[in-house]
Length: 152
Image 1 (cartoon, rainbow, N blue to C red):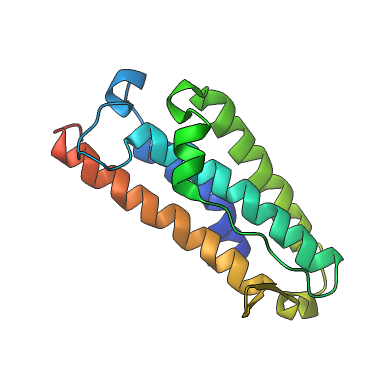
Image 2: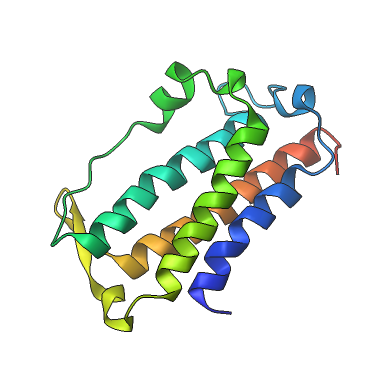
């Protein structure tokens, strides 16, 4: 399976992970001090958008510098539990489709273009791989939380 196909598939993986859950179930605190299912979903979308900006900059600019973001502060200060999850999922789907189309149409040599996060050099390919792994990691977290709630 190609990287682009795996990347595009992230939306379906995330939707499948929360299928059948109510908003109340997703907002239930399962592990004290840990994110709820709802927070995991909103975080995935926010992180994806931050990385989408990085992807575009790597393609369009020469050696861009990536700004970090504090995911815990975003979760807390952006009031994730007040966000409309359906809107976020729509945004996620559209972003993944748009970036997939962009990646499909670009020259193969662009996969080696890179940007910097501190001293670390990150290629376009690594950014896409990171986003694929990020969704998979949070889907596993959601599945674990569902199991703890006995909501298979």
